[in-house]
Image (tube, rainbow, N blue to C red; front, side, top):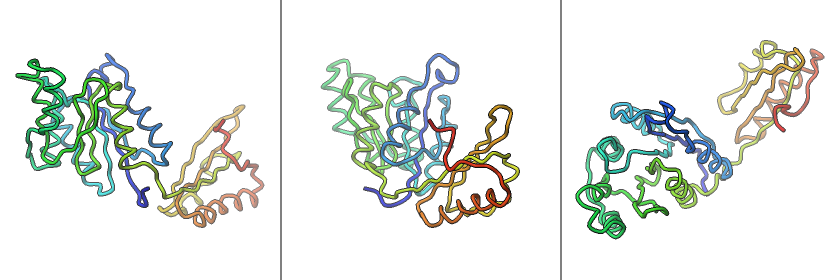
Length: 254
């Protein structure tokens, strides 16, 4: 169980996703796994196989002291697989080593064909730990129990995501409270109240149209139930005083 705020990031590396040759399946799966455990995404990046861009994204995420990252792709043995090297540059000051357990797994899987190239997939940032590959036994890896690196193939990466979350981020014990309403007015009518909501409370404003009539879904979310209720009541009080119709629910939800 975790009792602190954690910011989850995903970095999906693959030029073939951006040029349309393949469809991404990583975001949806990770998002589903996070939500069922009480977590949410902070941000997700889909980027091309560009070492400078990868390095900058990794550094951005590293600067967040509460970050947890899942990086997909680029841990193979071909010349365009940069992830292991870039990860070492950002997270372990460029220091790498042959991980003996990973090396053994690769040799056991491929025998003589592990050389001269496949064995290099065991050359990892120092102090890396392994994630099990249920397809071909070539492991993924992770650093500091928070930066996880998996293959670009969903059949391999999905089991690694589940393994990582079950071991290190099984359940968010910081319960969040959410209250929503749908007001039959425009967002502009509620902006003054929106501005009073403190940063500790997450505010979501979603404008909608129904039969050419404006409406807005207001949702407040936070770990402090009293604070959420306090500011939610400000919206209700305003709607009552101005005789604006509203429903105490989010009509965009089924």
